[in-house]
Amino acid sequence: MKRVALILAGGAGTRLRPLSSDENPKQFLRIFDGRSLLQKTYERAKRLTRSIYVSTNEQYAAKCEEQVGKVNILTEPARRNNAPAIALSCSEIEAREGDVVIAVLPSDHFIGDEEAFATAIDRACAFAESSDYLVTIAIQPTEPHTGYGYLELDGEIVAGVIRLERFLEKPSRDRAETFLRAGNYAWNAGIFIWRASVFRRELQRVAPQIASVTRENYEQMPSISIDYALMEKAANVAAVRGDFGWSDVGTFEALERVLLGERASRPQ
Image (tube, rainbow, N blue to C red; front, side, top):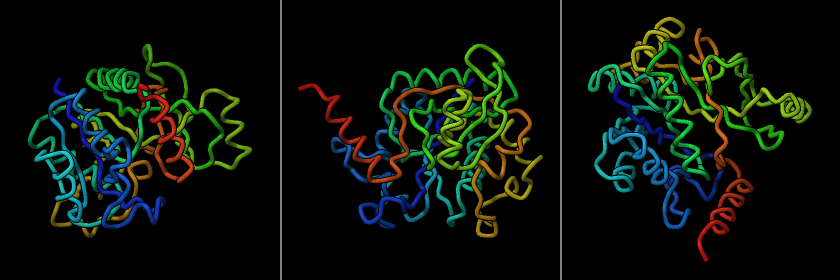
């Protein structure tokens, strides 16, 4: 089955102000050895497929084209968080491509181990191809971080694929430490993989208003994340563990760690 990458590049990067701005949010900053997080995400997606779509706010369409070329750019008519953006994009991809497997990849995250990332995404895609599950990537936590949402994991469905019990909001420090000790909790990175038809049917079932999104009614959509709108209510959700040096580069401290790690890994 054909695989498609959908890169989400419409965020405003508010947590890295003033380095990030409305005009030039963090996914476009060329501070990673002269490249941006969007460019690094695009190069990563090319390992998965040659069919790549970029969803972005109309304000950033030209900037996306400048950085990754004349790819399939799908513009969001307004800012409505990522559920309407993903729903509209997946609908347009299904109309063009048919019932493909779609990997939804945020453009503003850093991945340290590209090989391990590719392995995890390939496993998730293979499972999504052969099942009616929505699949997410469960990031192996390295500390009791209170700035991330968490995933509670259950038993294996098949080798390397775990049933997802529930999504959890950003925890207190004590609760995050409990999660880390338990071993069956992971960070929620907002990376999703599904067949277009499975996504469409499940969205129609649990979030019919979002499922009805079009370019014409986009501004009437609620501003809601895909976690709240769909993933927390969906019947069949699975996870593939990912341990590949992930960061959402959401703070200056995280950005410094990423940049120091990149410098240390370059050949001398």
